[in-house]
Length: 342
Image (tube, rainbow, N blue to C red; front, top):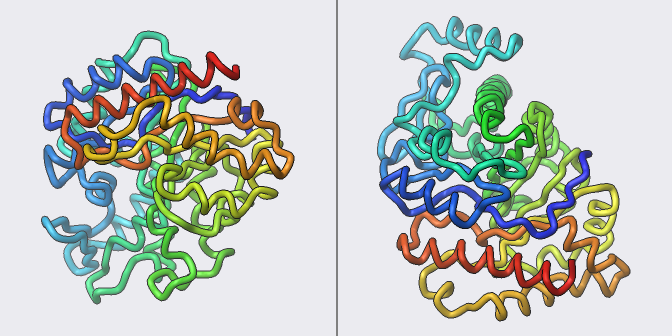
């Protein structure tokens, strides 16, 4: 595990409400000078919805406005699968990057970003969530087919390699998050996989990240799914679910002690809530969210040093003004906490 003393650096989870990629990148450059992230823009196009955005190159996959379906009858499927595996083996990302049609914000970000940031963040939908969002021709979900799940892991891994290669032109220190909202369903009928199987699926993709490795889950889950992994950052919705992480003080304490970091999603991601908060009120919330760990012996300043500040989740469905207010609050909260404690 790499050392991750971020000192409450602000960044975003990924999505922004803009249709103009340049406008989104300029806003990010204004407020996220240390760890900017490229913006996903699902309001611009359905191609930028999370599952569709990372679907390019998967054999036999058809996208509609409603779903992603893979059909082995559409093409010479075995040949396409063989090509995917061959590209994975030699890290040939040429056919498996993310096009401007699927990620206008990414391609704009390569030219519009803050100068000399400390690091740069990218993101990919995680293999569990992606595998639960794509069906095969029988209506089955990919994650329950061993061959298809393995192929999906290879595809997402190639997109990670492609991203990191591109983002290194901005900063040699890359941070890649796997977005895994489906982990909130762990233990339910919707996600009946064992803990060990989920960790195996996640590890297969995580090991392809050369820089800092993070996983974002926007709700409640069993956080030992992540604390036991070779992972650098656990990202969660601290505004609504701080109590869920607080149930694991010993595990989180060990995670931080070995160099891990927590991305505190303490800034709300709705217009109504963001207008009701100030940097001072969010500081109170953050300190309260951290207090269960300090009561169990985790050093408060160590938690801050190994922490980031983010919105609670994506901001795609805020107004542009609301998203700007959220970024402003995140940057101001970082400034307040550093001034007082760091």
